[in-house]
Length: 268
Image 1 (cartoon, one colour):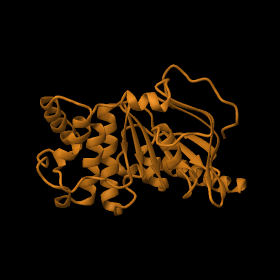
Image 2: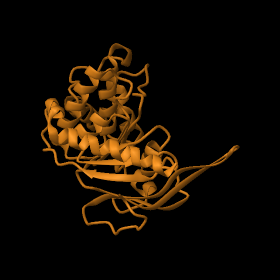
Image 3: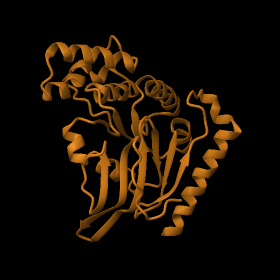
Image 4: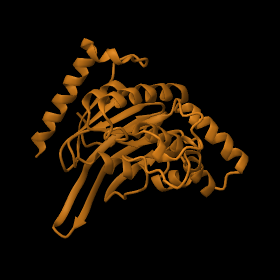
């Protein structure tokens, strides 16, 4: 359980939130999206955020990405404000939908942020080739999004986020709309990608098995106003075949996540 006292960031801390609050003003009155959130994400961590709909998971991710501004408290990304981190291109962001432009090829979609950033065309071509190989889409550069399955489109979206070599990857429930078989496959591929790149990943999900399977740390959040009810450090090995989900160790962590979700309702 996290208390309300901000803690100093460790030297290896990549993302740090201290006494974070965010309230949206609406026509029906204020909506308290986040309240007294304190969290540290270490370099190379895979951190999943799980909680009921509307608990502030995505809002917290958007604050990290400088897409939302907190009402009070602080968030630091690589020791600087989210705005400074955004300008320094410190992170890539993967949304719930792939968000690929249908009139651009897969290679063209991946090149787009590189074009905006002014990368040399030779560098753009090299980066596209590299990231397509990372997500097992080599050879699909000239295909259009509509020619790819939903899972392949999401992999292309991840490739686009990887293209400018950010050390942090923010992922907002990227596999939520996919069927279970495809989702399992992409979970395996994402773990392999994380192992190869050593990036720090923050991942929003509604799935307990997905959170436990992927993460080194699981952040359990309560219903609105979003609070952290538990931070669970995974004891599972970093190399995880899918059948690890049948082990007692996996089931024990999943049980603790469920207990944290139940505890969150005590704040209602």
